[in-house]
Length: 294
Image (cartoon, rainbow, N blue to C red; front, side):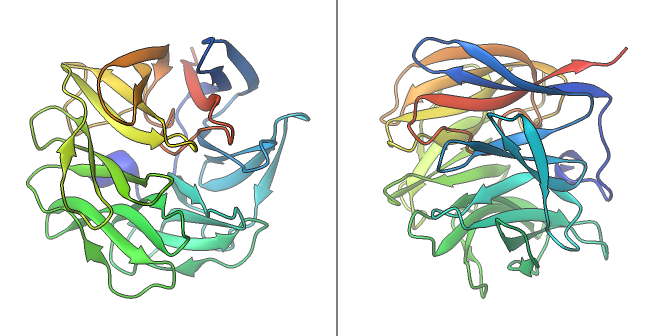
């Protein structure tokens, strides 16, 4: 099921108009940065605050916020990239999830951010990237092994992967806290999709959201104080699905847990907020909203 949702055999576009936006988390002001007559997804904010990195139709692009110009990043033969891409802590590299031509399954690669040859890190598939440890040594990802989706980590030099969760259902979206002590993720283990947190070694897995919604992809702010995530309404989707073309919310909560506030309501879902989209100063989020073409 997840192969179909997260990475088809060949990347294809949806019939949408994509709007790249930013939102101020204090004022709620939304600014349209650019609009595209085709599908773009999942903006990462670069460390200098000047660019957003997104994927579109299998390729990775750098978008200059001031000039509004997009430039393709050379990822070599990895031209079937999905919306699971993460920048290294020093922002010299980008890790990507690319559907290999042999079997169409997602595997994780690392490429220089300026472009270059991809280096394979996860021979086993499917593997969907989500986090890079603050010390730069490990990647965290969701992977299907023996019919079950769990959270894994692997060294940036490759080698044997480490399994951190082992429960029936779907665990997804693992992302490190800035201090490296925790990994945030989302899980269906209690019924609906909810936000969870665990120690970086997989211990003390703790549920952090408890509302009657399906909450996906927790992203920790650079200052470590806030968590942004995307929410689907209960009954609108199955707990383990994060499809496109749905009415969703971007929510914000404290990294200590507790209640949430709704930052934005929009038409989106898949592609809106799959990766960490915080600005370096923790004051803004970047995201993508969509309109269906008639």
